[in-house]
Image (cartoon, rainbow, N blue to C red; front, side, top):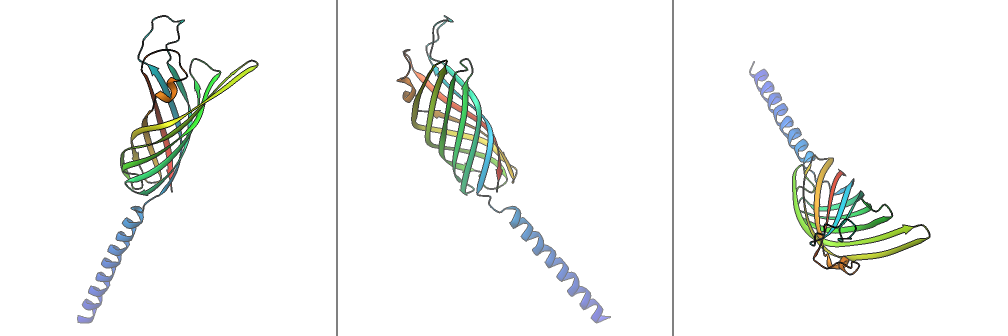
Amino acid sequence: MKNTVIKSTILASSLFFSNAIFANNETQYSDQLKHWSIGIGSYAFVIANDNDYDDDYYDDGDYVFSGLSLSAAYAFNNHFQIRGTYFSLEEDDLNNLESKGYDLMAYGGVGFAKKGFRGYGGAGLFSDEWSIKNAGYSSEVSFSGFQVGGGLGYNWGPVALDFVLTLRKADEYEDEFTQSGTYIAMSGNLSVSYLF
């Protein structure tokens, strides 16, 4: 009887500790960092002038672009990430005006590589090329410069959802416009990413 109790105690202890070790390993596996991500989303860019004109025939210098974006990112840890985003946009009112380019940003925050809430801010560079194509005429102009931005989202592990706003250095665009006033250049990006 004594041997049976000892054997049962050893067996129960072994099962209990192996179960605890298995649960610990499973927790460690689910908390592993996912460094890389690729994503797709919608992208909008607005450049606006603070002068508001009531005349419909007078160009007030406001442009609104929308389109698609592709992104790739690498998270060094859960708090620092570098993200590149390619965008291809079309001006909402002028179908012959297109914008293509990329953003390269460094972000600091939380939630880049582990499950949970994402909140971050950072700075980086943008490159934007506008092309106008009319019958028998085409023209291209390029812009590049500094930008700051931030975002919010949620990381479910294999999939993350992000909304990012960036504020570009608007004086890069001002040289191309004839209207006086202060320009603001801002972009927004809603994307879904796969983390691996």
